[in-house]
Image 1 (cartoon, one colour):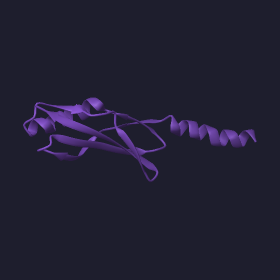
Image 2 (image 1 turned 180 degrees about the vertical axis):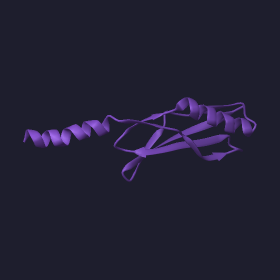
Image 3 (image 1 turned 90 degrees about the vertical axis):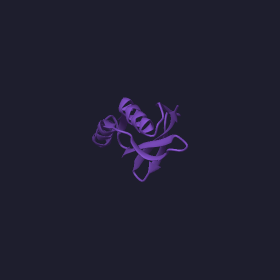
Image 4 (image 1 turned 90 degrees about the horizontal axis):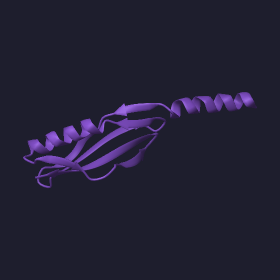
Length: 96
């Protein structure tokens, strides 16, 4: 019985404790509304660490290309289940 528990618990702990780094990508936007949607997908078995500094830089660059001054993230992100994975979505407002 102890061997069965070890066989099941140890791999579970190993895989669920792994952290993967992911970047957010612009998946939608409206120049007239000054809004962007950024997202990334990852395997649900892993924890995800998002490079928010890079995401803010990418969003700011897009907003500046549209004639805005900066970008402001609306929230902390919304997570959706997609099959065996997850998608996290952030909304961004371009500011004058």
